[in-house]
Length: 153
Image (cartoon, rainbow, N blue to C red; front, side):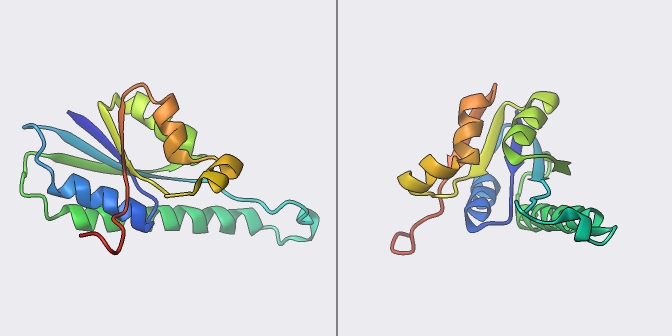
């Protein structure tokens, strides 16, 4: 089984990592941990007033945040008892929704596991949801892991 674990460093992402770590997987399964990043630009920003290395620094910062999310997930996954589980990782450039779906297709994932952002109905309507988009566009199974509420064990 090939499992793609998409992480972003959020508490919801951490819940997905914990779910993957505690679960038994079929022998010789593969786990690929990825984090996607994109450079966010502020509308109305006067780009000609920016220093020449502005975009380079933006990209470097976004890439480093994605790498930290992957590294954090890999550290948490060290608790997996099954040493036959082959674990790999990558940082993928691009908007998270298409980047996750494309990586799952490229790597031929059987399952994508990711956290839910837990947006309310109004925010989801206005902003959309990466997890919802992955569910609707992925060509494999998708598991969305919710972060447990503080009042529930």
